[in-house]
Length: 330
Image (tube, rainbow, N blue to C red):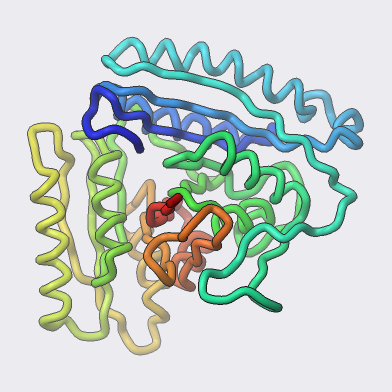
């Protein structure tokens, strides 16, 4: 986000769409979050992006063709802007991007691990992934990216589609993955966020991010996991409480931080977090990513995800938000 206050801040939002119902839900979820932010003033820049292979586009069902998908979102923008303008003092900009790619082409090097360059440290991906990443990094620079867990085709990786699996790892933006079987809370309804909290800067950043995104009627539960509760857990809860206090105000949501035991034989911390999401009937499970330098050095570096974040995103029944550290473009 740019700017130092609500009057000149630009919040950049990106929704990846492919004509599937779940990508439509991702658009609705994004608009719900935007409608919380617009009362703060500033500008909300909403982009819808679709990858299209010109060689095969005409062979698809009419409603899945690139031109049809993007024209439908032009109509959706009208409704989104009407709802946005009805209750806030911000300004919304909208656009659609159709990014062409050659689906018959070879895999493309798309990113590099930070600490080394050589065999085994280069990430390669299918042409559609390379095209979407290039357009995102050059034309959008989003703060938040929304996408469905599985689209109209492709190969699944766990509970996610292959495109989603690549993007949650390679995008250097906070990513919200919308699950097709889970309803998206309506803008006027309270939502429940379960936030994974530990002693890492990434987890506290996750909590801070959700405090900014949530509305007054929402509920936020911070969850820390360990085998035995001790001084470390008390420090984590204390640090989380400091973050909460710094964002407290008349419009703050209801927040508390709780401890969950890691019982022998009950699974990993990631499994405990997924179970906590179910137990607390979370709409969104929020977790920070892990990066070797707490932020990719540039947009050609991979913002590495930890195994816990990947497991939660692939196995949680609720929508998942992976909070990424900021990218340093200097």
